[in-house]
Length: 151
Image (cartoon, rainbow, N blue to C red; front, top):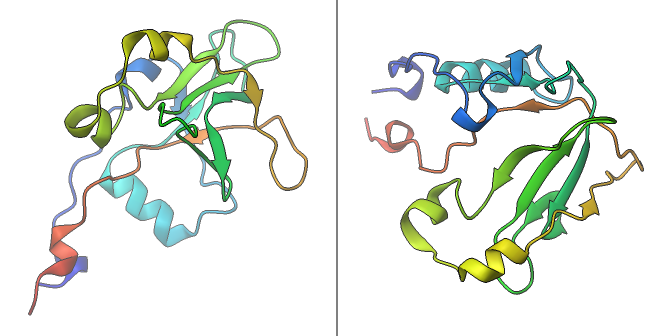
């Protein structure tokens, strides 16, 4: 069976912790049309909107940056990422101690160490930008077994 002929799952609602904070998103310029179609076919994508309708955010995080990605810190504590509007409360985007494969199946952490994490660093991209319009989507963590099937 060819990968292209595999049935696509229905579109799902976004992550529960972002309920009411997203709207349908246009394809970001850096995402190819094919990749965008795959993302939408596999689930969900949404443009982040703050509680007061804000659409531009700074990213505040706990962890390290490696190749443009926010990762766990050097001590192995999981990443924590908030979107912070110019005014208003931060929006939790990702907490590696609660979201994803490792949090669900693999890792455990000291509760006091988790509470001590602070998203106190501001993400700045390679162009020096620190304020972004955010389009979020879940990243599949499990392999696509259909793509590995033989003929």
